[in-house]
Image 1 (cartoon, helix red, strand yellow):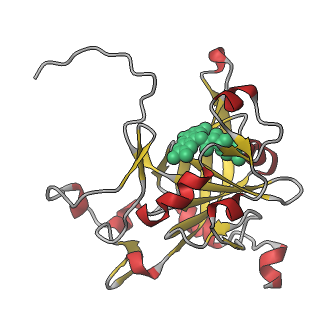
Image 2 (cartoon, helix red, strand yellow; image 1 turned 30 degrees about the horizontal axis):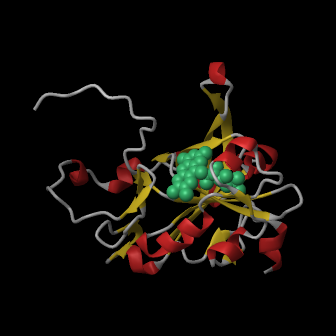
Length: 228
Ligand SMILES: Cc1cc2nc3c(=O)[nH]c(=O)nc-3n(C[C@H](O)[C@H](O)[C@H](O)COP(=O)(O)O)c2cc1C
C-alpha cells in the first residue's frame, strides 16, 4: 500500500497513561495526568509541559511518584483532564478549557498513600506505583521556547497490586494480567490480546537488571515513612 503525506497537529500514536504525583515545597500534593513516558531499566523518561504544576514541583523538589492506571481508572483520569494545580491558570491552558483544582486526589476520587523514599504520595488504586527521583532535566526544542521539559528519573521503589504479578515469580509482571490505560490521539483505549509469539520474550528478564536496582534498595526512607 502507498503512503500519503499528511501534517497531523499531534503525533500521539498511543502510549500508556501515567499519573505523576508531586509535592510543592510546602508539601501540598499534586497529581498530573500525562502519557509522554518510557522506561529503560529503572529509569523513566518523562516529557511534561514546563508550565504545569507537575513539572514545576519536579524541578523544585527533584521527586515524583509514577503511577500507572489500568483501564479501570479511566474515569478517574478523565476527571483530572483539563485541570491544573497551577493558580492562576496560564492563558494557553485557559484557551483549552483548563481550570485550577487544588485537591487533585479528591476531584479524581483517588486515594493518596504515603511513599517510603519520596515526599509525594502514590495512588492506591493504580496497580503500579513507583517512587522516583529526578537525575537530569532539559528543555525540549529550546529554540522554540522550551515549553516542555524532559526529565530523566530514577526509580527507587516499585509497588504493585499482587493481582498483576506472574504466578511463581514474585518479581515479574504478567502482561496478560496488566491492563494499562492507553492514550491515543487524546482518547482512551485498552490493550487487546497477545497477537504473536515473541522471540524477544525468550530472553530471561533477569539479564536486564541494572545497578540502579541495588542502589534503590539503599535509598533512605523519608522521616514521614519512618514515623509510620
Ligand atoms: C491522558 C492525558 C495525557 C496527557 N499527556 C501529557 C503529556 O504527556 N505531557 C504534558 O505535558 N501534558 C500532558 N497532559 C496534560 C497535563 O495533564 C496538563 O499539562 C496538566 O496541566 C497537568 O496538571 P498540573 O498542571 O497540575 O501539573 C495530558 C493529559 C491527559 C488527560
